[in-house]
Structures are given as C-alpha cells and as structure tokens.
Length: 476
Image (cartoon, rainbow, N blue to C red; front, side):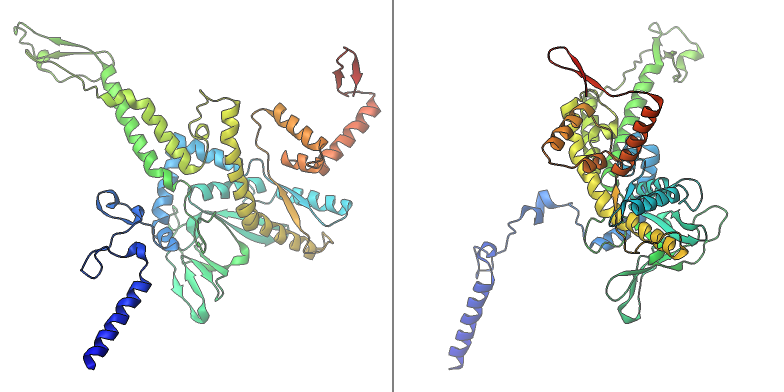
C-alpha cells in the first residue's frame, strides 16, 4: 500500500511539472537528464553571446557611471570637433532665442499686461546678472546634454524671482540613506514615503573648486530646485549624459585620425634619402640619425634602404570616417550634417527628411521635459510672487502655454505655401500658424496695427502687388 502511494505521488508530481513547464522550454530528453536550451538568441552564451554586456537596475547603473561618463562627455564636448558641434546644435534647437509665454483664461488687456510683465522680468531673471532667462535655459540645456542633467535654484528677492544655475556636481551623489517613516535619500535627492521628491542635498561650492574648501551638503527644499533631465526609464533619479552612446566611438575616431595624420606628416617630411653605393663616404653624416623636418634630406649607410608602411586600410579611410560619423549621429539622434557640418551631398529632400524626425524629437524634450521641469515651476513661482507683492491682481492658478522658437526652414517658400493652403482649408488657425513660427499672434497683430497707422499718417504705401495672367497689375 505504501509503495502504491509513493508511485501515485511521483506520478502526480511528474504531471504537475509537465503542466507548469511550457512545451517550448521542455528538453527533448526530459526525464533522461537532458539539458535545456534557450530559444532567444539575445539570451544565449557561446560564441555569439560571450562578452556581451548587460544593463541592470537603472538607478544603480546611472549612479555607478554618472561621474565618469559625465567627465568624459564634458571632455569630448570641449575637445572633439564633431561632438562640440552636435552639442551646440542640440542646445540651439532646444532653446534657441528662448520660449515665449502666452497666458490663457484672462481678458485680452489683462493677458497682455501679464505677458509684458513676464517678458520684462525675463530680461533680469539671472541671479548672477550675466544673461536673461533664455541664457539660463541654454546653460541648463547644455548641462543636460553633456552631464545628463541641469540644475538651478530659485531665489525670492525684494526685486522678484531670480534663477541661479549650478553645476550638476553640486548634488551630493554619495549621500544615500534610509530614513524613518519610509523616507529615503538616493544619490543626494530625498524622497518621502510616497516616492515624491521633497529635498535636495547640495554642496554650497563645488568640491573641487579652486581656492575653496569642501563644505558639507545642505538640505534644500525641492520647491526651490529646478532639476532638468530627460529620463530614459521610470523612477529614474539622476540624469545620464546624452553623449554616453557616442563617447567610445568618438574616442576611437580621434585616435585613428591622429595615427593617420601622423603617418602622413612623417611621409611628407622626408624629401629624399641619399645612399653611398660605393661605400667610400666615410663621413659621420652618412651614419647620422634621420632628420624629421619639412624638406629633410637624410644620408643612409651603405646597403640600407627605407620603406614607409602604406597599409591598405588608408584607402578605406573616407568610408570608415563616414561610418563612424553616422554611428555618432545615430547615438545622439541628430542628422549627420548637424554633427559633421558636411552638406556636400545634401539637397532639399534629404535635409527635410533628416530634420523632420529630429525636430519632433526636440519638441518631445521641450514639451515633456523642459516645460514641466523648468518653465512651469518658474511661471508658477514668479506669478505667486507677483500676486503676493501686489504687482498683479489675477488668479494664482492662471494657466500659461509656451511657444518654442521655430528653427530656420530649409525652403521657407514651400513651407509658407503649405501654411497658406492649410489656412484656406480651415485646417489651422492664424494664431496657430504664427505660433509655429515662434512668435505670439498678439505681438504680430499689434505690430501690424501700429505699422498700418504709421504708414497712413506718413502717407506711405507698402501694400504688395501681383500680376494677373493678362498682365494687369492689381493691388492686393
């Protein structure tokens, strides 16, 4: 009886394992000691899988490599001509001359007063009084591209709100701790029990600044901190440099180019080699070391010869350079010509095809990262300060939209034709068309009205004309 029970239990266990194990993962030798094989090539080892890296928990990976990746990215952005050009173009497309504010939910006169007040404040928004709000945003955007994150503090002063940009290394990255009540500090950023950012631990000065001593980090309320970074995964705490996928390629490209240039330089320096074929020279000059300078004539000992290496790879240099630049451009998400500056083979179609997805990507960063992380907090903080000071009398929850600068067009005439057709078909409003050009419709209308009044007062007429098919010129 006991044997029968053991047999039944074993049979049930075998059946359960058969049910729980999907057929695609069962060994063909199941029950005979056979091995299992993965069906996903990306998860295999062997010849193709050995040496392949793996990416673990996002915050752990970013924290471990944040400083070294940022340092290398900053070096490359300052020294590599291609990455330096790409960084400048990315910042230009993101910020340009600065976004424009449009207020919603107010009467026209009130709306214009608020917008003009904000524009006046933008000119003196910088805490260091060196630039305006657009300059502050440009610095934060550059830090986000190079270091992975931009940092700034908001200060309430008697003259209004001021924004102070800081280097990202002000954050005390080494500060990580579990606090009471479910709170925690992760890489210098404090979270409450619900996972919301409540404070930042910042060094008053850079730890490595010249002529300053390292100071302990201070706790700064998160409401006073602007922390800009474009996340690559949910729950990300710190930003990762946008240059990270291109750093190694750029470094290898620099070394390869230096080697080619050095080889070409040495070859160009040797103008001639003189050999004493009769072995009767006997002068010290014949046995001297080669002279490496432009136009050098070197004397060689009897029976010797000189051959310069000319590897076959040098003929493939242009193709290898192009492939490396394409890889770097793909890593940064920019068209290749924004990296290399080369427009040799470009035309209208290729430029437009390359710029359209790039502009969409930049708009995504502008409206999903720059606006909620920087522009909206700045607007809300500025508005509250103006209301409390009595300079404005509007609701504190007044909403605002942001008009981003419009990049220059490849062919403005064709773009305007498309806008004209969209307006004629009622597919977009005139305000929308003007906003897409980076301007405020209110500003444009007021300027046109002022121009018309001044022209009428001075007796001027700049009304455009067009020629009819019959050759008659009619005023439009």
